[in-house]
Image 1: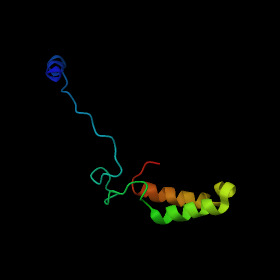
Image 2: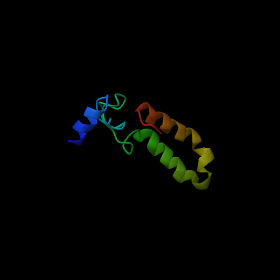
Image 3: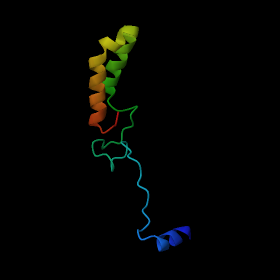
Image 4: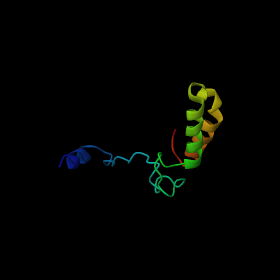
Length: 82
């Protein structure tokens, strides 16, 4: 009822709110046709990155930077905004 009143009083039609971007939805993100969630995307780069962090511990920031960048590139390639 309220929608009818507001549309009657306003000159513009009531717009439906758009759904937020969902990178796991293949219809919204053609780069991710399988609908992978961030936790399951790029397993190859993720495991190598994680192993590097476990191996180097506190010095991992410097030693693993290249692997982190490769993982970020893979995630962005699937349409994740990180």
